[in-house]
Length: 329
Image (cartoon, rainbow, N blue to C red; front, side, top):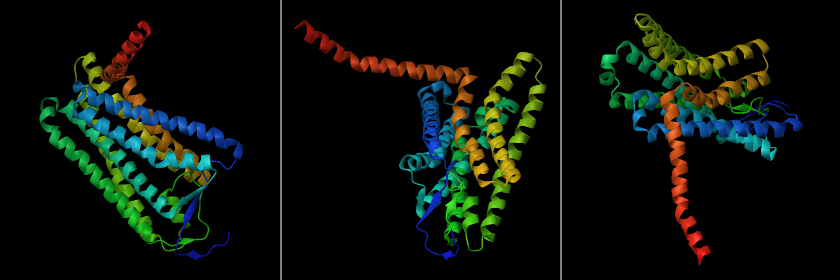
């Protein structure tokens, strides 16, 4: 394709993970299954927490928000990818692309900040257990979530508004399955210096900063656990952090893995394949991580499922009685 300046952009082309026609049905089935598991798993976590009064604590309040963000994060990307595969179309409109960038940046940032808030919650619970109820009161918990949302919206808004000032070349092919900001900046014909500065600045502040906060929290947590005399006390204290620590390792591990793989291979398609880990796999795995080793969550999920089936039987009972009465007549 020849290149040239173009001020009005109608649409971009998302090249996806593969251009092989034989792989498209397989990719569609795989990503549809992963998306349904992600939505149902995270929705189940939210419903279980809201329906069980024993789980109305700061830790599970933050977990329900994290599940909602993970569900929304995946819904920003995967449905459009499935539509493109089903319709055999690679096009995404310019407003649609910028909208996807906005929500991707917002939910990505909020996911990161919520993991940091949850680390702080575990720090207060283990290092200052006597003051936990006073410090982590409902007002502060709600304020932390709202602050995370505000910072995430502001971050996404800045990137989106700066993206509006860009002009693009005729070559509008994005070698990815969603509109990633880095790939869009590569297609721009205009100066992207301000955009790149903002990306590096935000990565430093909202990427490395929260990670350092999580590391500091767990250093203090480990030191507090080591001072516990009994082995059962150490196990009980550490078991409350295992799920969160696993999610943090999965989230940051996949993000760092994507960065290193893209830097090593210098292939945009390889980066797209690696991006599946933190955009699709991580949100899908979080409900399993938080429910497998958590007895309270397992109990709440079982109660929710059994209650749903009991309600279903109760709801259909009058119809069963009516049909039996009809048969007797």
